[in-house]
Image 1 (tube, rainbow, N blue to C red):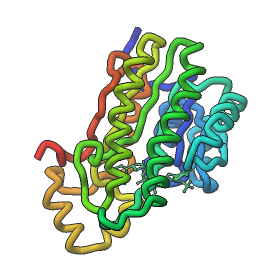
Image 2 (cartoon, rainbow, N blue to C red; image 1 turned 180 degrees about the vertical axis):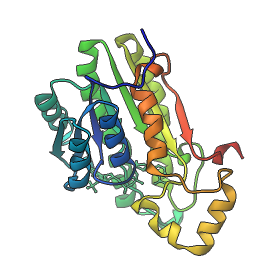
Image 3 (tube, rainbow, N blue to C red; image 1 turned 30 degrees about the vertical axis):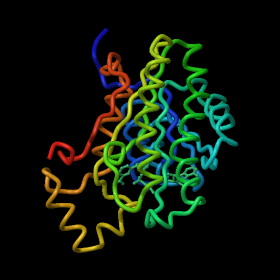
Length: 251
Ligand code: NDP
């Protein structure tokens, strides 16, 4: 079998793809040849347009993934429209910031339910389909806070560490079914999510000084890793957490 990043004939489901990292991944998968189902709360108009411009089929499954209520519908609608799911990208995520001593239960639950619980049950639903077909790729979007504790983001650090553990747990059990499960851990990526940090002159300077590459990451930097992990070039890679961080963790 020739090693290739070509995804022609593949179908992918990407969560949280109306903006930021999810949008870059969904568009890159389409440009590599995949048809794509998008799952999120907001209308992903620009993503849909760019996937169509790449000549691929695109399906917009509007859903709230802040829990498990809609995960089966998302998989069913993606399958109904595309016929198969070869690649699942669990990208949807939120962050809540507050001091540890006053961190609320609501902020704990919101982050854990969206970033960890929905991710697991969506993966489970998609993996049942992939296991029947004997192949599949699951890519979880983790974080530097899968490795570090951070400050004022306890539920996010717990959820993203959980994503790293879950990636390995899923990889162990799903390997026998021909499914590879990996995570990408983005460093500091310029998206809406990090706009406040970029705008804060002092924090921005501190961050840039700490990144060996000397720049913020672009969403497309994460898409490159996602293409590798979606393609047959990564068929022997599973249970891995790939940091794409301009060298942050190497320092
Ligand atoms: P954005 O805020 O730009 O995008 C987050 C996406 O998640 C949106 O598409 C949003 O869509 C979707 N989403 C949030 N809540 C829900 C929900 N309840 N149901 C469905 N979709 C939801 O963030 P980024 O692109 O920066 O982040 C993408 C991923 O990358 C996240 O998992 C984040 O934790 C991770 N990450 C980002 C880093 C960065 O520096 N930017 C660093 C490390 C990790 P909508 O609101 O319409 O539903």
